[in-house]
Amino acid sequence: MSEANKRVALQFLKAMNEADAAGQEDCLTEDVVTHTHGFGKVSGTRNRETMLATVDAFKAILPGGFNPKFNRVTAEGNVVVVEWDGDAVLSNGVPYHNQYVFIFTFTGGKISRLDEYFCTAHADATIYPLLLELSEAMAKGN
Image (cartoon, rainbow, N blue to C red; front, side, top):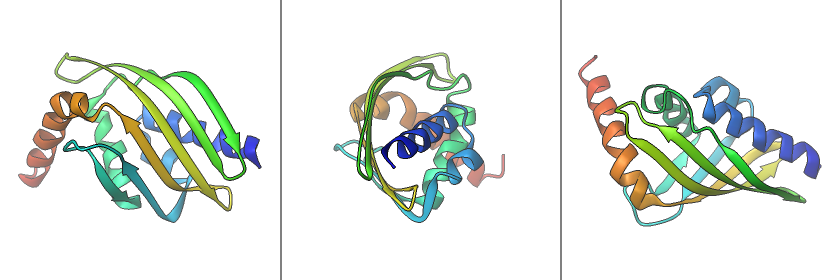
């Protein structure tokens, strides 16, 4: 089970890198939640719908993807931990480098919970303004 869960976790991250919401959707339970730990604007708990909308937004915000470098992938039972570095350029040309630890919890071979740890202060300063712009543009119908 652990090896199968590793493959699903890495498939999820590949889909995230490619801003492929449909690819991520296949990895998730219907009641999945993600919790971004920290105290920034990007922190908080999100449901499946918001998770998929966020990865879809990455098409505009991170057109070249996160370019993940996986440092460690550990699996035991229904938990997979992935430590990785991102090396991206945002749509506004600003470099975005962050370090991540994602803890995936599985139910029935699919991700039922994702706990994300990364520098939320950096994400607030770089990615969050682009998310707001995109959200405002969508609200105006652009």
